[in-house]
Length: 93
Ligand SMILES: [Zn+2]
Ligand SMILES: [Zn+2]
Image (cartoon, rainbow, N blue to C red; front, side, top):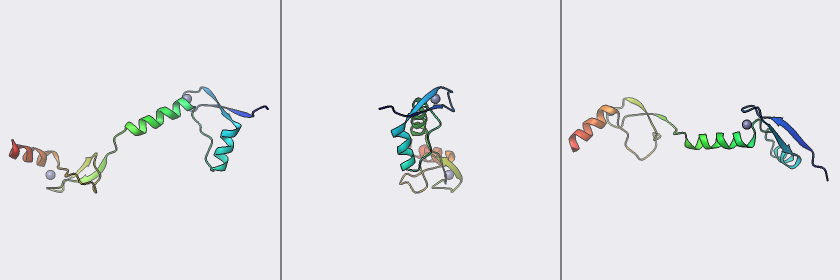
């Protein structure tokens, strides 16, 4: 049996990669686009996304200055702006 496979060029590293028939059939079935990056680049992108810390716009829990935090506004963590944080730490130390 000859497998029909598409030869595509990775948009990122310009390397050629194969998309075998079963794979493209699967994309079609799930109405997903055929990837434009080779498997290595796809893996890399996934890793980058996972490692990237998301930043959220929120306000200081004390003085309500807007700031960016790695915690979303609805997280249980108290987030203080730099000034309030140092005030708070200064009070503790
Ligand atoms: Zn690539
Ligand atoms: Zn503050």
